[in-house]
Length: 80
Image (cartoon, rainbow, N blue to C red; front, side, top):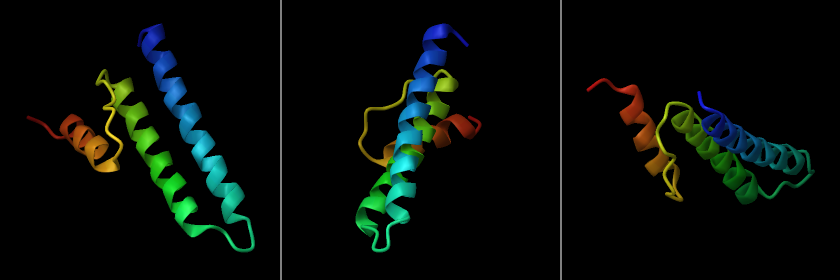
């Protein structure tokens, strides 16, 4: 993996970990804001998928939904 590619994967992972940290902080609250917890869980998964795509040489889409990212991931995993 090239340095640029490795750096890009690292950046996606750092962003994902920030979302997961937000989930943990909010979930520890006595009355967590469930919609925000769910949002950051979704963001966490989306960024992990983008890191996986990037690691496999596929440009992570700029789509704002997990559906678009998941579609690209499935294309990567399923044989032609």
